[in-house]
Length: 462
Image (cartoon, rainbow, N blue to C red; front, side, top):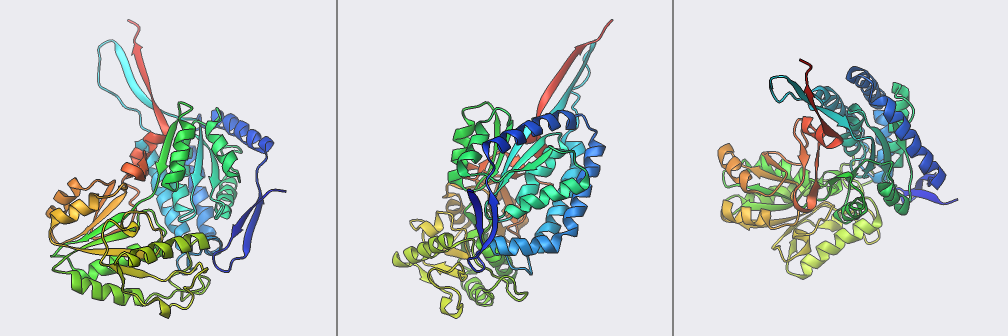
């Protein structure tokens, strides 16, 4: 039997095995989704909300158990992993409560002799392709609003975190969601792409790499369906001369190294005004040296392995290439015993004397590495922040909020942060520009991508 295997980055063992869905199973799943959605779209918003809140209750009750599974599947420290379920529930509940506003009908105003309004109609079957790095949060972004909008969902999770998909199915079943409204498939790459071309799928929500995003877009281009793409980033942080340096270091270094740097909106580039450069570097190196790289199943570990050896060697390769081109490393990685060739454990690293000719400053790293450059002005920082094919988030640290807003208006990005980074507010749309994607999730605007407007233009009887 052809099996999907999840190799744990913790110790290299096979943690999960699942058979890939057969063509017959795939077809039956899509048929069930179509049939279930035809009924589900007629349920009231209150009924959908009641079931979705019960799903949240069920997920929250399993937070620690799911956290341990996430730890073994993708390596996040157990001290941090259970919080993803809790944060995911908070985000889900916000989106449930926001559904009324996001799905509200619109009245364009009076017209004598006519009744006019615009409804939001569900798209049908939404195919969600979710990633491993934040396996609950990224899934919530699409699944909860899709179901609240009256769609059915077929979820294909990353082969690195398949148990998260199964947990979602388990919690929806416990909540009383009608069969067929939410289903899970474990798919080969070929079958995953094939679903995009299937006429029974009406929308694709993909979160992952830019390269795979292009494949999704090409497959969907053969059909007239909508696609949401949440892709990669090379997100910058800029520390102005007036910033609280200690506060900036605490937030930006955490934003670079949390989850072993495996976050699409993690900080991968830093631009420091020359007035604060030396102090920032001194504090940042001290903070980096304080990380505890180790077995993520231990409570005292705060930096776990990256997802696999291939990713680890890619990260090490970027650093080695930068050093060969003139960069300097500031963290002595020899003190991190588990960081060695062939290991999934990668020590945190700060690189200086870098420039934009180096891949480490232009190509997504997805690891606990950050490159740092000194700048002399806002104008120089702005030019460098925009010198990228990505545009997901940008973080500015300063005591001058007005200056930050002025600068933020000129940054080519989806979200501008002031004195924070690497965070999502579900009240705001999560959107990327350039190679960071298309479409958006979260907030009431996120419901627009999972519905279509339907206009009613009614001449009233005299």
